[in-house]
Length: 473
Image (tube, rainbow, N blue to C red; front, side, top):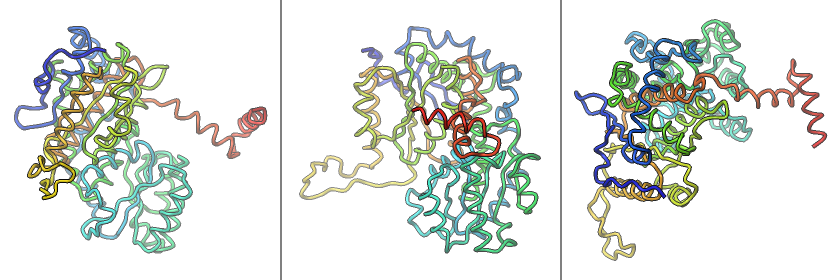
């Protein structure tokens, strides 16, 4: 078992702790309790590779260079464009009790991550007169799910944001057809087209053709931005604005991080470069699984978005760290045992939120049957913070390298920073790994088999072959 010998009390004072700017408090990265599992100087040894990887991104000489539109997207977004998105969101908000975001993968995960992080945890139970209910569909083919969704919407004034470059992605296209028909039946075609918005390709595809034919308001998914990097395009910004959150602050946060992780930022001060270096160092040392950890339930879908971003970007050519996630303290009572004592092929990246948005004090009880009066008068978050610190201590002592990302609060500005930090970190890391971070050839394998089994026109030969194979099994 490898145990970090440096005192845990210096956890927040790192050889590579990097604050984003000195002018204001921002998210920060601490790799102390990961770097100490590597040979001395191992992180610094990655500097030439990391710098070359980032330079390749900047110069467009890396694999997948036709999908680098996200790289300087934050600084290219104008106030006028955000106003245009907000105006569309306001129309939907004023005319809908519920808005269904139809999309899969990168077409919904980023928006959902931000919305869930900022929303009331019980928004679906609370009668919120200010904001419409945001629902997500088109990300599965569950008949019960879709039936229950359409039943829920029967007495609702609802709208739809259909997100698809092609308009033919099975899960999303199937869902959109159902919702389009239902919306038109309930509101009439003229009114329905005011509350159906398409986010799609500029010129091509079934979704573009449909939007033009029906007269829907539409926004463009840039050709040079892949789905998992698209949260700062209309794909993510419009749903987030519909939910009532400040997309200008979200973009401003991403702009903060774009500056902080610029190509001219020194390696030791560049958080994305440090993150890419240490995770590649750990991977080379035999750590094959990265577990994204949060101690805030609101960050569950941020982990889901991160898993797609890194899994789809790096998992190819028989390479790549496997991205997993846990919600603590909940999963300490399920996965905690494996993390503490299982195979030592893992490391953790913990997202820590310094200050919650609400305040709740633990009460005293006269009988004290649970023995918890020693906590009376303390904030619940203090208990959570000690659980977080105690867990990090235990896991590091148990041989699990630990990376820590600290957010001052859960708000739009810091979430924008976090999003861009992970995006640029992913682009650098994938290039250091030696893969194309911007394609996803493996995603097509299941589609080919599914279409063949469903006898889709054009798949006749594949259909014969797969059915013959199944008959022999």
